[in-house]
Image (cartoon, rainbow over all chains, first blue to last red; front, side):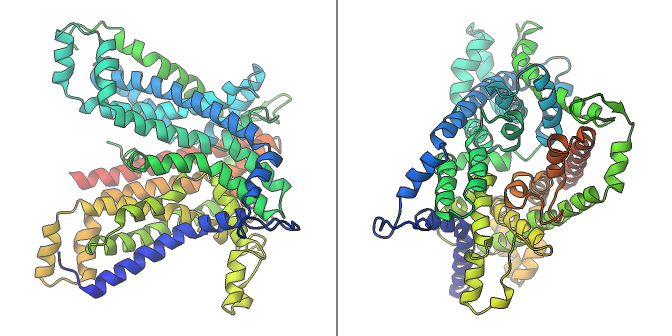
Length: 272
Length: 289
């Protein structure tokens, strides 16, 4: 298609202005994180103060909270992904009574906001003494990720060629073998997308860990940041450094697997 | 599979169904049950029927909270859709390089924890923050204000954060949709002498109806679910000027001992989200027939 030079110039201006709008707040935080702390005398490195990260790390006890976040994320992602592969396999390749109704239940689950379940979850799990445990924080998020994961993996298994499954079955392969030795290896991209999305959702989740661990035993990094904010209202540099620390893990995964993030978040929203 | 044993599918479903049922479906049903009672979280509860739902319409704080959610929809959904349509349509017309990098950058706000986003924007909105400094630099001193401490401006200021987060998502979604429109359709329109504006309304807009529906669902639901952003930036204040339904759920259930009321808000919110999804899916399906 032919486009005039003027039009192309306008396009680039829009591209750059909009990208700048998206980046500006991020740059603001990065700049603040590297700026001198108020009242501090140190000259820093070429005017930059990477020492802020060290100070924020130790003052906010982020080594502890990041470790909790990793523990919660690994638990949620591994359980949810395995359960979703199994259920997606059943929905995607087998015929059985009640499959439609059951599948609609999972679809419904995707829409349920955390706000709708967190109140009874807290009071019921407190009753059985489970609040302030890893399970109180992880299990509700596992359930949320399974709702999406079942939908997502079913969509993948439905596209896998039936001839492949038939051939393997004729060769005497059990359904378990068909799943783990043939379909899952071929479906690595779909599993990968589900994994990075579940990781991001769990890492960034706020309400569930806030409510389910009231004494802070299982405080995740975003919560620690919110509390750190309350304690360091004036310490802009430290707060910004802490924010960067909390965001970094997901951003790094995003930079390496951005196609998966974009694909999953856009296609995952398109229901049949 | 031919020689499949009858119980086998259910065996594969068991872990998912058990976890999903126990920690999502069951609590949802319990929420509905809670919403019919008056309970402070500790003592005895009392059955009150639909009183908690009546309160959604009579309690002024709650009415305000739902009103604020509507305002947020404007900022999370309508504004990003408008911006996204214009940006995507223009970028789709011309061959620009660097679209891949552009996508990566504008999508980035989506993957940041809302707390991080809130901390960033608090620094922008601070009395001596980026925004006021920029306004002073260009001589617009009279426009500076305490963005997060002002009864009129705090809600729009919080809303702008939503615009920032959602516009990239909407733009990337629309770009993907417009990219699927056959090129010769545009060529034909140009040969017929259609200008950019007519081309947009005649070809581009109708062909991304499905994407618009998806964008609206995602962003409206995000606006309705807003919690962390309000919790970290304003705590619902000043006064009640930025409180939202999800924030009221938290406050009432865990701070004010009004558990039944909190559950009713949560159920109402869920119902609204369901209805929205159904409506939008209907519209998207109508397109395909």
